[in-house]
Image (cartoon, rainbow, N blue to C red; front, side):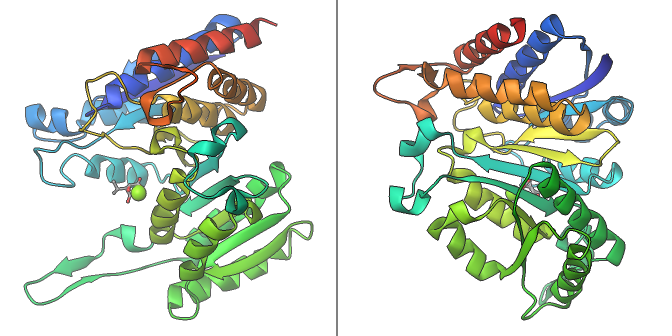
Amino acid sequence: MKKTIAITRGDGCGPEVVNEGIKILKIVSEFTDYDFEFKDAPAGGEVWKVFGTNLPEKSFDTIKNSDALLFGALGLPDLPPGIAESAIMKIRQSLDLYVNLRPVKLYDILREKCPLKSEFIGSGIDITFVRENTEGLYKNVGNLGEDSAENLMLYTRDGCERIIKFAFEYAKRKGHKILTSVDKANLLNTSKLWRKIFHEMSENYSNIETEDIYIDAFTQWLIRAPHRFQTVVTGNMFGDIISDEGAFLIGSLGMGSSGNIHPGKVSMYEPIHGSAPDIAGKGIANPIGTILSVKLMFEESFNSIEIGNEVDKAVEESLKEGRTVDIKSEKLKTLSTEEMGDLIAEQLKSRLKK
Ligand code: IPM
Ligand code: MG
């Protein structure tokens, strides 16, 4: 199976972590039928400094004509906020990547790294946020004046239906018992429409229990009883916020993975930690967020659940042997980005060989 994968390394620690993601893809191609061709698609702040655009046309063409995009991070401290990062928005909007999938799973072995007390962690944390990724406040409709500013929060029925349907189908395929919808239907019209559609659609999925929670209450329940959530579906802005809150529950932002997805079309997989200028270039960034994004790529773009599982197991096993500094343990060796990637690659190799 030949697949073309566009590679955007980006800024800060992006290139360091993406190299480890590529390492994992190469192991997969060595031991399975997959054959990957990697094509560079430079974007971001460094690129903006040279070409005056954060997403050159050539890069976008490469992305458009690939099977998937592996993406590092964008943003440089010496540029105004947004100059580099807006390339992410352009990619999401132009490719209509309407699903932002953000799983947060606390590996048992990292329980001590979770900021919550054990009694709140309870039976464990394994939540997938399904965030709407093209509508709401992110449509970027509004204006900025001297004395007032406005942003339009716009949701369409089609836009709500397709993301809510994705969430139900995701919950179904993962065998989840409950789907939680997060909104603000006690105030916002957009949430009233969202909730109506959520209830309408729930009729088609009688095996999945549903619940509605207001965004403010949800932020509290997420730290008070995270074990009660499985799939959580929500709008763009709320999803942006709660997925960051959730990401820290798994021990480190460096562990968070994501997929910007349009099922059946070219989709983009990226760690959630961003360019992290404070640690960039030091070789200490945690590559697991990127490697778990590669796992998502297999599951969501290549329909290879088994390989996704193997990558997940390889990560989990390697955490028993060594860790990057953000999740370090006194009993284990502290590893560089590259060493962590090597360890996971070795684990994966021995699993795929079997
Ligand atoms: C994210 C980021 C982006 C967003 C920023 C960089 C615009 O926070 O991917 O969650 O708000 O979606
Ligand atoms: Mg965010």
